[in-house]
Image 1 (cartoon, one colour):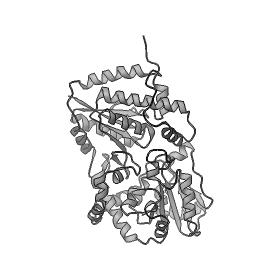
Image 2 (cartoon, rainbow, N blue to C red):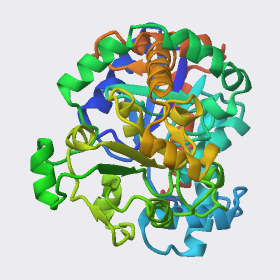
Image 3 (cartoon, helix red, strand yellow):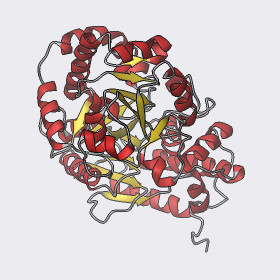
Image 4 (cartoon, helix red, strand yellow):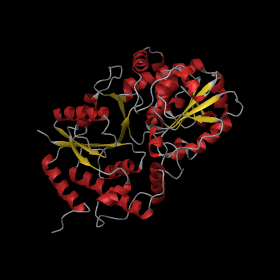
Amino acid sequence: MLHDICLISCYGTADPGIAAFLNGLNRALEVHGIRLLVLTTQPNPDLDALSIDIPYLLSGFDQMLDDKVKTNPLHPLQATLASEEVQTGHAQDREVVRRGMAKCEAFYAALGNTLSPCAAFLWNTTLPHGRIARNTLCATGIPAYCIERGWLPGTFQLHTFENNAYNDFFTDFTLNRSLPDIVQLYGAMPEPFDSAQQFYLAQRIQKYDAGPQLDAQDLRRKYGLGNGKLAVCFCGLAGASAGPHNMPSMAYTSPHFESVSEALAMFSNLMAPYPDVQVLVQEHPIQRIIGNNARIPTRFIATDGENIHTLLNAADHLAFIGSTTVQAEALLVDKPRLSLSRDAASLVGASYGFVEKGPEAVASWMSDKDAKENAFAARAMINYICRERLIRDEKLPDFVRRDINDLADYIAGLSRPSKITVDERLERFIAEANDMLMNSCTD
């Protein structure tokens, strides 16, 4: 008999792999008597769990919910407005966002107070919608976490706050202070690094659609690169780890720039002493989709969305702006890595960190002076996240130790008794939500 509810929001349920993960979690939770409720911005008929369609942007909440819903938001308007504008690539109406914030807060307050779920897992809490959802649910007494696709393909990750540098590696005191010991312990282990490396380099999995895989010489011919040294710079999603510093966590994640364009301009200046190094820039796929492209410095060359494995294979040096998960995949490739933002890879010493070392990091990256130490730390990082931090989907081999059943067991441990049945709570929420809807019946 179902006796409790778990919430999970997701902006990517149209992805078959994500939908399969949610279906697996739904089955695992049913064993514990817990109903999974998925809040989705992408309806998918293949989703088995009970689901509710929700907007992605705050303007969508303004359109969905009636104006009689609370209109004085608790979250800061200016920072949220900036975040929405970075995400969409164009200006947003200030009043629409203000109302949307308040209505988003009211919606999640109703979820927390009426459904009283045992836990909530919110997709990408760096973005305004997810962040407001997490904060509001926490205020109603619901344990709420950030969930996103994991650092390695076919995995998922949880964090207390966000999935950029404002993640547990930086914000959890015990984990942060334990990292030197973790590197020494896990860096000495051959597994699961060797199995992960063998699997991913053979399978060449990608999160997003991209071009066919090319060999290194074909890539060089395509972009007229010649035979000199090649550096490839992977850019994270704008607004998720690089944005105006009044946006939550942006100044922390990327303290030296406020946009991907600024980061590339800074990187171009840092590369001035190395005129013979060619630099390819791979923007995040979402930036290409929405047409919110960065300004590319004159000496750099923008890709047209290459297969990331083409780039990882062809590059002599790898650089990263923001918290792109490609940097974790790059730990499986024995090439020097430069982090221009804060990142767990540079925190543990697997990459050369510009935030930590300044311009000296670029010179060290170019000469790869710490190659042996970086390789040891990269092995430690992969071993640690595979054994302790990641949750694998059902198709991934078990070099990632935790699976959907582990997550379901954890959620079940957060369950608490209630005199109100699951069905009653759902009925009450449906009635309350209907009263909030813009086109609800008022007779």
